[in-house]
Image 1 (cartoon, one colour):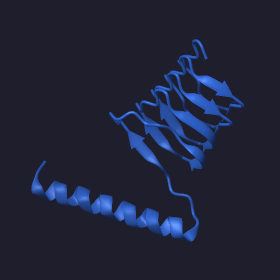
Image 2: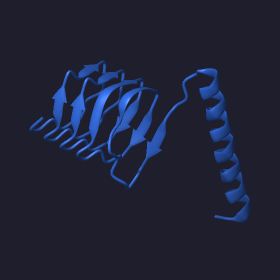
Image 3: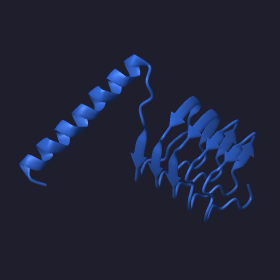
Image 4: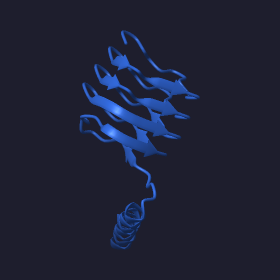
Length: 122
């Protein structure tokens, strides 16, 4: 990547952070994006996520409590052995996601795309 492109990418990233900070101060929602993270994530609790964009994320053994996802894209994620309690998924795309041996309690999947989702042992 050349010097000019690095500057453009850095400028765009800085603008995104300032824009999100302003939206948070105004009380408006800002959208969460996380793709191809090679680090294992630990989970989320007491959170509302609107239009979250997560692809190929590893939530192995994670704990989710009282979370609401709305109009989110969570494709090809791995929730193996995760503890998911009181989570609502509304209008989410969860294609090719794996919930193998996950503990699901009070979980709602409403109008979700569950094509290719693996619930073996859940």
